[in-house]
Length: 328
Image 1 (cartoon, rainbow, N blue to C red):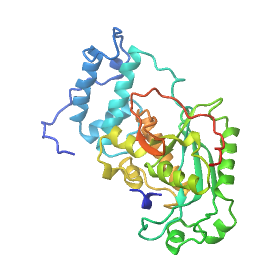
Image 2: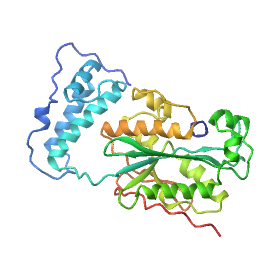
Image 3: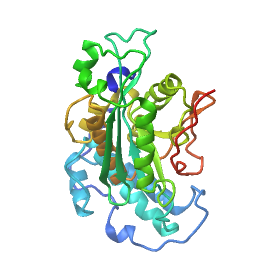
Image 4: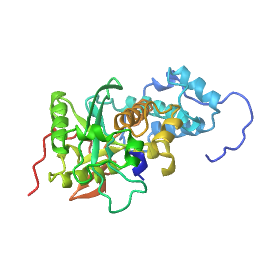
């Protein structure tokens, strides 16, 4: 619910063929194994030199090299194309040192983007209640959206939606009047996730567009509904942070529509529909995974407070979903 959330020019170089050693022959060569943390290793020096070469490439040169490796040449601004090529090359070189364990990453990512009650200007005393609970199930092996969940929620504190809220979200008064209350919808989410064996047969984690979905909307809603914060939603991937860190862009370039545009895509669906927002966030996640980003948990709730999760923290999936207990 984005309404509620908060290149340096390069020096000219003479024309001519770029002398850059980025080839399939090179990425498939043999190398001597060594300590992966030793950045004096020839592989890391070679990666650094190649990155410098890629930085000097023109857009046409980048597209030509990406095409050579059968990578996407159409989607993304120049900086994204650079990152795509750098990550392909780095991955190929590092795989020679230590084969990647295909079982070490999440099997699924659950993308969530709540819609909540709101008023124009969002006065600070206003209590936001979740009125749409969507989940988009992204298979990290196939890089496809495998399934979706969507249910609307009846608000309790402010049962009548403001005109602003209806206009923003497209959710009408009649829809929420006929909906279940939040505890029942959450139970339905838990059942849906269990049916897909998340946290038991398959590892997974949650992903959101920003911090607010889990740290504010869900946290407030659980207090309103007098239930504890669900354990499976206490840690998540904030894709805005991941995107900014991966593509090296400032915070003001990590809004949903801007991220899509920078990756060569446009928004598909109705903005501020929770399900459509979640699908578009999933499209960004897919593109980042294709570009070599290992999306991983970077935020969590601890003792009711939002905290950052270090990138050095061992990767682990969310627990099997369970309905949280009611508060005393």
